[in-house]
Each structure stands twice: as structure tokens, then as C-alpha cells.
Image 1 (cartoon, rainbow, N blue to C red):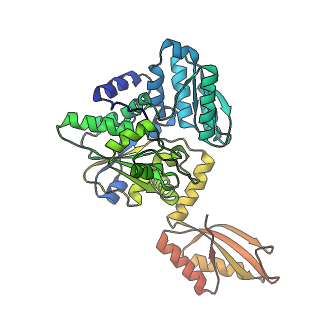
Image 2 (cartoon, rainbow, N blue to C red):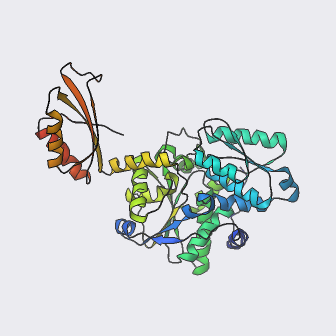
Image 3 (cartoon, helix red, strand yellow):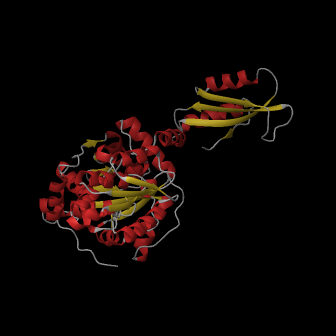
Length: 413
């Protein structure tokens, strides 16, 4: 592993000046809801409003801007499930560089169209980023194009770190910053920039940096414990933007030295966070971009002083958003689906409806069948979905059904 020199505050400031014509200086927004949960002021850094919909354009633009004329003439190649692809494509378009992007076969259509819309040639291959990255490396060796790695390069990290510099300029009183982790490029840059800026503001001042990973793709906790990057088997996660099997060598060194704590969140935690952001702040955020909020809601963050949370991206497929909102409502106790076996005779549906109405549950959907599911000839199965007002009300609805003589079975989404 090659040791990467720690970036300086001057480097981050120079990178920020170079990025200014291309990127947006995204706003911050205080969240009273999260502040109440944490017991400290919480501000959100709205990088979901960035050009291309995520922070990735920062690192990609900085990396490409530092290529030599000879390297630019060879073109660039990258692999990504969406955000890095769009960042590289836009940066290449701005700088007049030919770009080829390898994307998974199942990439969401909006991300595919956006990447092509920025002028990149897109090659669809494999079912994950790892396959695409291998193919991108082979492309670079075969055609001489410059490989633009999504996180494992110092210039990428410096570009991403401008987000931390910007945040500290907008909210100089921050004592804690919460950042999602995939390969590690964002948090490495943010940690280095924020800590350097804090020390420049006041000698000896420190900012606490907390990283958050999806528990189904948490390579950093085991890697930090081992003292070196470790490959793990990842499980399915809605936070596909941070679904990485192995930390990057370059960001790992910085994270080991600069990040104070790494926590993990569940799929339900992430779904609840997306729902809270929609309802409380009216913000559309992708799952990977909401893990910091998920950690606060799940009680995983212990912060002293004002806290910044980076919403790193907002590129989410509408169909996935629909499923996640339903899952989030269920996880929050506000949506309940039950199967109820009933005698096959008139009046049973009315009886169920009256029971639900008396319990204050609003019926959303009803399905009624006489077939399958191990039913007796004289039975039918009723599937009912209702709105509930929280976990306590959810239990009251189930108790009302049991008290009325029904045998409801909760359907897990």
C-alpha cells in the first residue's frame, strides 16, 4: 500500500476555488426534529441539491482538472452504479474529455439517462460495481484511457473534502460531523478538511467525525479492527451508493487517523430516515445519503455540541422511493397489513370493517380470495392494509381484531 500524504488546508482551499465555476455551494438547513432527538443543534448539509444530485461531482471534477494534456487526450474511463458516473460524465463534458462509463445492467433508468445526457459513452455490464470496475481497468489497460476510481485516489479525496471545508465555513460552531461511508473517499476528505479548518479557526480545536455504514455492507468496522482494509461479503441493502466490499487503500489510512467513530444502521433505520426527511424537511434523499440521519434517529450518535449531518445525494429511482416509503411507514408503525382467515359466509367483511373503523384504522387496500394458502373449503382469506398512527395504535388495532374473534397474521413487507 502506498502512503498518501495528508492533504493540507491550502490544498482544499485551492481545490474549492477551482471547483467554484462548476459546482453549487449547497445550503445548510437546521432540523428542529433531529435537534430534539439528539439534544443538540443539528444542521443538514444539502448536498442532495448538488449538480448531478450528489457530492461525487466534486471529486471527479478535481481529479480530471489535474490531468495532463496528454492524459486528457487519451480519455477517461470509470465504473459506477450512478453518482460517480454522473460526476465523471459532467466533469468530462466541462473539460472536453472523452468519457466511457461502465454501469451495472440493473442501473436505475434515471441515472443511466442522466449519464448519457452528459455526453458519456455508457457500457452496461455485470450486476454490480465490482464487475464494472474490473472491466474499466481492463479498458484502461487496453485503450490507454485514464481510470477514474470512485474513491481510491488522493485527488478524488481532496475534491470531496471541499464539502467539509464549505460546511465549516457555513457553520463554524460545529463540534461533530456525521458522514456516510462507502469506499471512504468522502469521509476521508471531509475529516481532513474539517479538522484542518477547525484548527485554523482556533488553535487546538477539534471536530469529532462520525462515520456511518449500512450494517449489510459494513467493511470499515472490521477493517479498522484488523488495522488494514478487509474484504467482506455484502448483503442486499437499499443504500446501494455505499455498498462496497472493501475500503480503499488511500482513504483507509486517513480514516484510521482522523475518524473518531464508525457506527452502523439497519435497513429499517434507513427507511425511517428517508420518511422523516420527506415529512419533516420536504427533502428527497437517496438511501446512502440518509444514513447519518438514520444513525441519529436510531440513537447511534452521542454528540456534544452543534452537529452537522451530510445528506450526500438525492438520486433515487421513484419506484424505489415508493417501496421505501411504504417500508418506512411500516417500520414506524404507521402502516399495517394483515391476513385474516374468515368463514365463507355473508357479513364477515362488514364485521372486519366495523372492527377496524372502531379502532380508528383507515383501510387502504383489501384483497379477498378463496384459493390457496392452505384454506379449508369453507374458508376465505382476507388481506387488509390499513393506516395506523404509530406503534401503540398498531398494537391496539391488532388487539381489537383478536378481541373480535379474528386471527390476524401480520404481513412483513
